[in-house]
Each structure stands twice: as structure tokens, then as C-alpha cells.
Length: 261
Ligand code: ADP
Image (tube, rainbow, N blue to C red):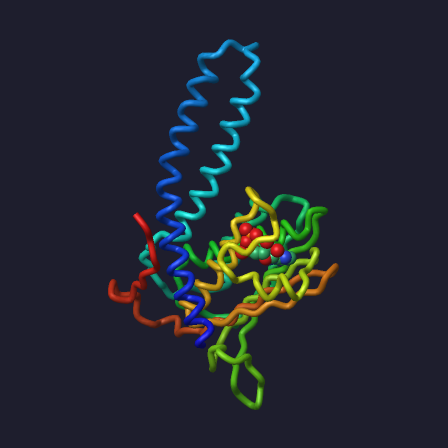
């Protein structure tokens, strides 16, 4: 728990810093984008500098995308937790995921009808599934299989072992499995750190799993990873189950996460 607290504090500091930098960067990138467009419009088609200016514009666009992700990460979102049927969210998001990760990867949903409801922000939950799916895609460049599974579980009973820090009682286990590259223990130990990425500059931000970790912690859940080089990775998220009839969220229920601006 102390580790989770330290992680949350670190995330908040990083979020503030990154948000401030991203905001200023965005303004500068607008200048770069604006002037390269202007030049490309005005220069004759055979001008020798056109290819170079096109590259400047493309690099600017990539940088804009990165700063947009940084801003989204650091935004002080007012979370609106609601009581959600987890299987419904997975089914709805599943369709979008297929478009997101392409046809080379087949998605299987294995849904336990007894999975139940969780209390979480629906937008965030969707983001979690998207982040895990995009990582799975990147780990399976030749295609493969992505499995999303829900299982109703009861933790901390009848001697059943539950990991330290995991919620107790009625829970739902959400497991996302790929049969991709897998990762080494060195990588696995660092994946939830903000800005840790193995994807190279301009490709990864290292914020996807930090966001996933933040979501799980805020939702009173627990996440763990198992991975084998060459055969794939599973992310297992344990979330406490709530009663379907629980009262709708009140404005006071909203949590704040850091945002710069
Ligand atoms: P990013 O995707 O921008 O690199 P993430 O925080 O989402 O940032 O992931 C951090 C790192 O964790 C990735 O760069 C990758 O090395 C590793 N990783 C995440 N998911 C997987 C996966 N399913 N298979 C293999 N490696 C993964």
C-alpha cells in the first residue's frame, strides 16, 4: 500500500510537470505547424526545399500527438464513477478495439455471466482496455490473439490466497492476454513507471500503463502481470464488485487527479 501511495504521489508530480511542459510545447508546435503549412502552400511544386519542409511538418505533427497524450494524462479529470456492468463495457469496447488494433489480431471475449458490476469511471475503464490492447498489438507485430476474460471471484476466503494489497471479498478478475513477444523481468519490473517505454522516441510515451495503474488504484483494485518471453503476457486486474442497486454517484464522489493549465 505504501508503494501504491508513493507511486500515486510520483504520478501527481510527474503529471503536473508534464502538463505544464506539454502546454507550452503545444503553443510552440502551433507556430512550427502554421509556418510549414504556409511555406508548403506558397512554394512552387518543384522547389528544392519542399521535401525538407514536409518532414518538418510531419515531425511537428508527431510531436503534437505526443503532447496531446501528455496533456490528457496530466489533465485534472473529474472522475465520474458509476456502477457499470463489466461485461457490457467489455463487449462494447471490444468492437472498437478490433478497429483500433487491426484485423491481424483476433479478439476473443470470455465473459462470466456472474462477473457483476464495478464502480468506476466508464471513460477511464475504456481507456484501460484500449491501452492494454494497443500494447498487446505492439507485442504481436505479425498478428496473434488477444483474449479478454472476466471471472467472478471471491478473495480472502477458505484459505484462498490473494496478493497483498488486493481487494477482499466479492471481486471480478479482468484478464487481458496476448500471445506476443512477452517481456524480461527487468522490463516487467518497470512497466508501471511513468515514461518507461521500450518503444523508442516518438513511438511510445510510457504513460499507458501508468494510467492503467492509476485507474486500478483509484478504483480500489489491484493489478499484476505475468509474462513469458516468446509466449505472451497477461495483465490481471482485480476489482471489487458492487451491488447493482447501489446509489448513483453524487457530485462529492468525484476524485481529482492533477491537471496543469
Ligand atoms: P508505451 O506503450 O508508450 O511504451 P506503456 O506504459 O503502455 O507505454 O508500456 C510500457 C512498456 O511496457 C512498453 O514499452 C513495453 O515494453 C512493455 N509492455 C507493455 N505491455 C506489453 C505487452 N502486452 N507485451 C510486451 N511488453 C509490454
